[in-house]
Length: 234
Ligand code: DC
Image (cartoon, helix red, strand yellow):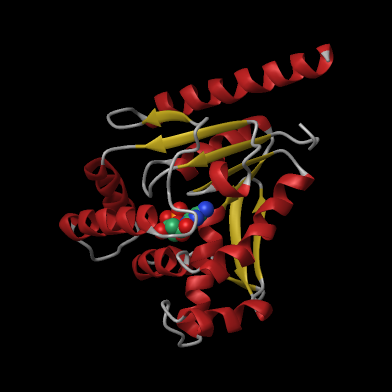
């Protein structure tokens, strides 16, 4: 490994539990947690606010040079800032989910965010979640996990989360959105959602969070121990 820092890539469809698990692992191991979906969401919000259609690649590309998207992590709490404004809550709105999936199809957007994402892993130990972390962003990640769950279960979790936030949505709509986003993310031409060849598959359907978190934490700890033994021996 040429980099001095340890990196964990977690990819998978929306609602599989990537962020909950990644945040937990980051807290326990003292890694930086990078939620790459938040970067795409922030750009989708920017496009909406500027009145640019999420399918208008030239219009969105024109916004990028001045786009100022930052992630902060204070005491394990992730903050997302757009032009200095805290948009952590705003990017979680239901309509931004689909818009983020649409902007993430645009090659100009993916190219713009690639360096931002890689820079995190050059500076510290990271756990990064997204759709293409193990395949494109960090192809040399020390450990790659593909986290998934049945669409019905992912929709149920998302529905409960939105309901808890007071959003007026019904389960059937959320399920239809989950399925549409899966297709969108898996079928796009650039960096589609797919497991890296060397990813470890973890299906969380029917598991409690505790069980899934423990399992993944153990996987990462095992790999860390192996890497430190390898570096001592060689
Ligand atoms: O993980 P999320 O739901 O917050 O991501 C929002 C959208 O961003 C998702 O539909 C796909 C896209 N995305 C991506 O294309 N690549 C990533 N590494 C992360 C997210």
